[in-house]
Image 1: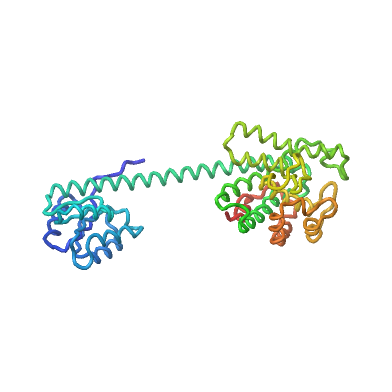
Image 2: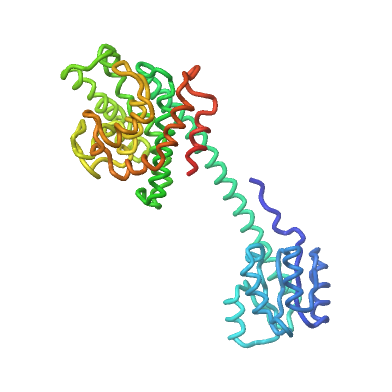
Amino acid sequence: MTAPRVNRAADILAVDDTPANLLILIATLNAKGHRVRPVLDGRLALEVARRTPPELILLDIRMPGMDGFEVCAHLKEDPLLAEIPVIFISSSPDASDKVQAFAAGGVDYVTKPFHVDEVIARVEAHLKIRRLQVALDQYNRGLQEMVRTQVREISESQIATIFALAKLSESRDDETGHHIVRVQRYFVALARRLCEDGVVPEAARDGFLENIFQACALHDIGKVGIPDSILLKPGELTPGELEAMKRHTLIGAETLAAVLEGYPGNAFVRMGVEVTRSHHERWDGSGYPDGLSGEAIPLAARIVMLADQYDALRNKRPYKGEFDAERTYAILTEGDGRSDPRHVDPRVLAAFKAIRTEFDAIHEELREPLPGGRPASWTEQVLEQAQW
């Protein structure tokens, strides 16, 4: 970064009700190359400063109408003027005035009659400090933007990797190629509603939503370890086959847990472990692989569980045909012998009931086969729907 020019000419506002004092300041500072704008009263000084903010203000205290303390207070209340350094110049030697000047926001105090060299030294010192502060702020903003850019690049790379992993499992048993996108869209709709209902604490929403949005795409990656003879079987599974199928939760979780060992602070991978392992757990404890119940099941897994179940019901699978919206809603909210509303977190189920038409619309939008897998604007489409 180029070093700031701290000794260049400055635009200075001088405020004093005595013209002679202003003439001295003008002559003194003009000789140093600075531009001085003289003002005779406080109210006019505020108007001038707001119209064209100066780099520094020299401010008398004892003035009719509005004194220097009031002027300084108004300056500090204005976001555009608050950071401008104010040097008080006053004939008062009273220590209490000096204390009040600094309390009002002044950076320095010069006593009249002032020495020309002292005024110059103090003005240039505070100009240098202010310019260095501005340069540092600009540097920090640039640094923050660099970090944001790098994070965006990392995030896009991470999302691409997630999608590739998820597609690896999805490609074997998904008829349309939209399963990942649909589940993420269902999740977004549910999560938004749960935030509105206060289920997700406000302080945790940003990190939670960002991580689960990505992690939910990994919920079935463990299916890569399930034989096709089981995964694609066009009928009911035997008890032994069902137990083998259930292992996809453990295969996926163990795969991500190995990654987590290398990146123990990665919240996304940690949530990925939770989602892959627990998205078949049930609120009443009848799920697998751990038989968790109630709030012992991670909230992320509870949300993905309903989104995944809705998608499985609405779409064709090797072992079943597709169900329409009404039958799917009835199964999820009333049960059908295999499914039971007691399997679902009541708050997640209530959120689903409130936005069921949104689920139906997502299904209709994404029911056709997806040429080539992921659409060009896949990430943008889902993130735009998220509206974090």
